[in-house]
Length: 119
View 1 (spheres, rainbow, N blue to C red):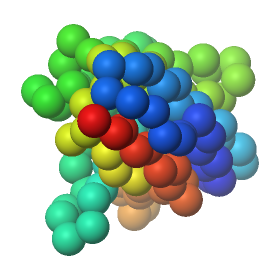
View 2: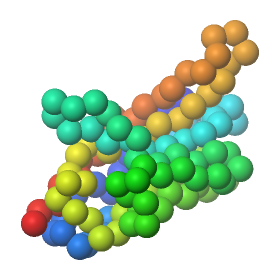
View 3: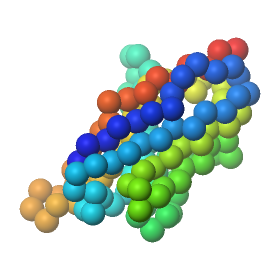
């Protein structure tokens, strides 16, 4: 599975951005997908996830401001980010999970896209 993110950039506080992540390869085996973010010196943290059936989960820090969605026909997951804050500044990574019969869960990651929010 190959994941390619797009949509990052530099915005001012209060503005919006939409991230996209297109999956290719063994997309029929993908279960949950999600977005994580990381700042230098800190661990990667969960932002939002969505199951193949559409069930979503958000971190408390983005709940009510961000929305994750998914188009299974296009093998694409989106992250709509509204009311952005400087503390949302990070590299955002797309994630896809496949549960293999033998090895179990395996996580695939995109290359990351930078989101910078200025105050």
